[in-house]
Length: 159
Image (cartoon, rainbow, N blue to C red):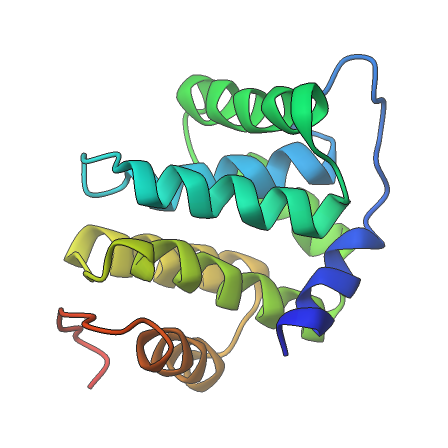
């Protein structure tokens, strides 16, 4: 399934590579991944590394280009007043399967540190709602990510 996620996100238009903006689907994806990583107020190195791995694998980038995209996502998230600016971009550029796959990536970032915090859970729920991912698909993606994260802890109101 992870390969399908990468395939969907690779197909996103790159927008202007010279000056990434929140209208660039790559920056929107990066910003949302950064937002969920930071939702619990604790930015752990393992989460940041997983975020960068996802971006590197998804967009086949490394080095300065990877650092620039991660920084653009962080900057866009820090400047945003809500998630809609990012979710509307992804909703326009991803089909239903791509949106479900993106929620799976968000769960991977959440479980990178082995814990599920209620604010992370709430963030994924809000993003899923905004991009049109059904509750059962969101829950299934969460269960899959939790099962693949050894030692994962946490609870959710979904169960």
